[in-house]
Length: 328
Image 1 (cartoon, rainbow, N blue to C red):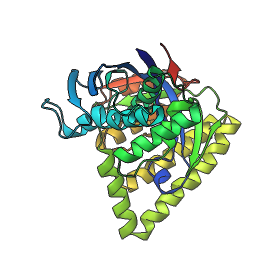
Image 2 (spheres, rainbow, N blue to C red; image 1 turned 135 degrees about the horizontal axis):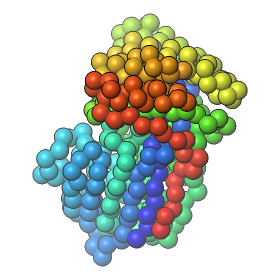
Image 3 (cartoon, helix red, strand yellow; image 1 turned 180 degrees about the horizontal axis):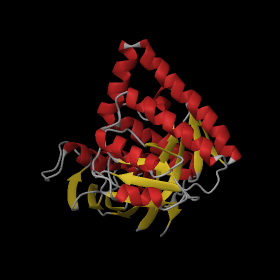
Image 4 (cartoon, rainbow, N blue to C red; image 1 turned 60 degrees about the vertical axis):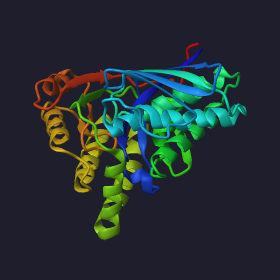
């Protein structure tokens, strides 16, 4: 069996706008998904998921999933737990030329599904890496990131960006603008994450922003304004100016709220962090529920979030300097 892990991420700036060619700056954090892949003697695919915000389940089927299995979880969670793995395994077969090979795939994750921390990207990166290595092929990081992006794009009907998968594959802070992906030097960021226990529907949220842009020109201007914030934020990151990063994060959250992708629980956590003295706070990921990210070197924000109604968990997150890790 080959085993790989890949980190989740938070967005300092740029989610949603990155879909329209604007830049984004996500950072990998040390919460990880681990995927083990073992070749079978037949062509079936068996997926066993642990954690993933579920009680865990196992499904087995031939080839690809023609219909969802009979398990008691929502369709969106099934897509996250199975659909991404299905397409990732297709890439493994394509890379290795082993079209009829089957696998047992085991997923363990510390990253909640749909919370804006890049759970699907981490699972896809780790699955492709472990699957190809199980068949004797080790991908370069750039190709791994590209294959992972193609997987997310297929599952998300072409609405994915390269940001999540590139960040998860490479680690650290990265800048993504269209097809241009690069790593950035980043200081030791005092990252605090608040989680409301919920999950947004990425597809619906992305579609909602697209509809706004088509209906209102000022919504398109809002997306471009987020791109301007990202460019200023990139320069502040290079200078190590945490206070400026925080101010720009606050602007970014306001614009995301204007695009309709925040929620009452996310706004409550953002304001709790700001009132506790955080340099800045914003939602991270698609929105609609899930997580916020704040910058605060003190314990005040984590403490304030732990007492905020609607916040289920709050924790400090270290920057993950390494992306994919090959464990076995």
